[in-house]
Length: 237
Image (tube, rainbow, N blue to C red; front, side, top):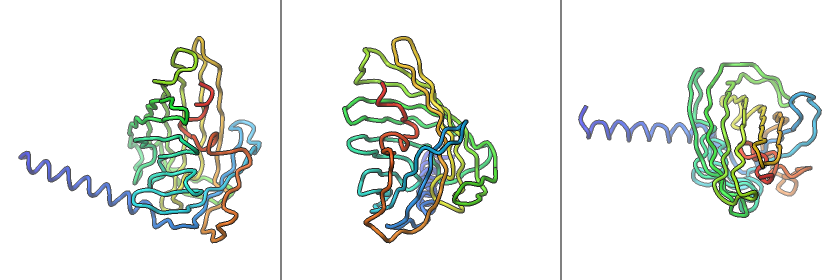
């Protein structure tokens, strides 16, 4: 194949991926909201609920809660809370096929300027019917994990890497956001604090909410704790 033909093929593939990403957004609109509950993975005792509401739709991304959380059209985080930014996150894809495997490396910049590099590998492990408070969904079960590595802003004079693992259930044909997620994190290297996370998140309700005055209910500040799915525990470094 000639160089020009190869470039054309790559360009077509890129356009196809862009089209798939746009289609994957499924015309989310201002007023769309998603309510989740969180619990310990093992005890299944609920410890919080929160709701995200789309307040602006921009080219290539969605703005929730007046900018308190921003994602791309597939659900990958770009901004969390005040001053925390993410670049290059590729956890969620335009489509899923059983057996597909992918890697993502991205940077998280905390509000105080500390920078972290996150390396994850994911695999679509299978199809699974999952029941959560929002209903029963035919999902793809995504499994994976990796490491969080701090590269600047060290508080203890050294990096405190941590191991994270995920199981995420997505049903792109039925709902644009994830259906459920199990997230665990471990970290106790020499000279670093011990940190453990065992959180399950489940979709409680989703739909279009036209009441702009009541879109945010977050009993324990999910933007700095729960919503930082791949970044949980960063404030403890």
